[in-house]
Length: 429
Image 1 (spheres, rainbow, N blue to C red):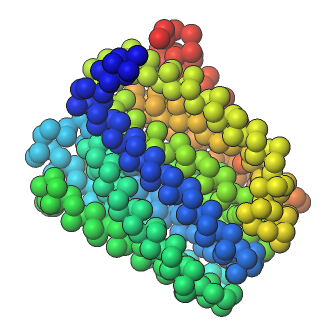
Image 2 (image 1 turned 60 degrees about the vertical axis):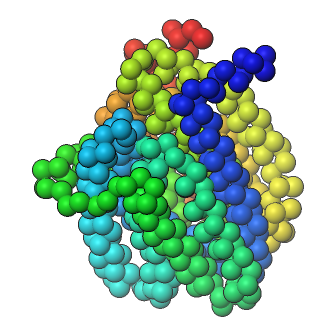
């Protein structure tokens, strides 16, 4: 048995895959543990109201992260993974994507400035929004998609853990009272920007990839390639970030805080699927380029392993929601318990969405169909939160998100199982 396992990792591809998975597992372990250290501290020191303000600012700025990412997190990753042995092509992809992202970043800053100084709700806390925008700058500078496509995730791990560890320590040093709330987005942004600058240095030093200006035709090509994913990401925001945004508009920062406590805890758990997603997406994309059957077999094996594990997590969260919330955040967050209970099944649904959506529909370039599903889900959620939040506030927001996640999961599974992408019945392991 041991000899058989060792033989699985003799090839360079499998060694790289294992290395990438371990690197990203360490990273997600840090992403899981560090927020669980800082979030309870911030809720206790800042109070639910200011915690809600920071969550609202984060939800607002998240739209600009979506705009600057523009779907390159998937399309550029796929292109780099396919052409990684062609140095000239890699330089073309890297330079084109970075050029587009910088243009979108400056556009985002202009839009944020107009938003902040046009509405009192934003202008009274203008500093918080502009400091939070630093995360957009950092994400533009950090070409995660490049490292994923090259399947060298260890660089992502080193940089992110260093930046986030420094941020975590700094929170406990500099944020000691409620009036220090503005320091949180400042420290977060500094961490993102430093990691981004360092990552660009590594791109040049370790891979010999330099920036070269590209013509308009080339830029348009890569922009068009990511169109459908961008629309999908915007649609996703309609049932993720928009929920907090609309909740903040209809209620207040305290209500947003109660929702954000449960939502951020669920998001921390959802990140556990990220090592699998980031590691296997370029790998499966490359496999699918040569053998459709092999790629689908990999997805089915993942389904058999990950679905039961994620369901167990969801079940435990539902049963012990009260104990989890009080233990982590204290009794001042008791109003978050029912919200956490409603959202408990989300990790399971996200795993299924990733397997059938990202690893099947997007790998096999069914981008348009995927976008339509996500877009319709975003519209449904927008309608639901506008109807439910005025009456049920944070609970209404949670119910809306749950219903939409269920809708997305069933639509994606139905699509893949109704055509040539079928993996449940047709693919034999």
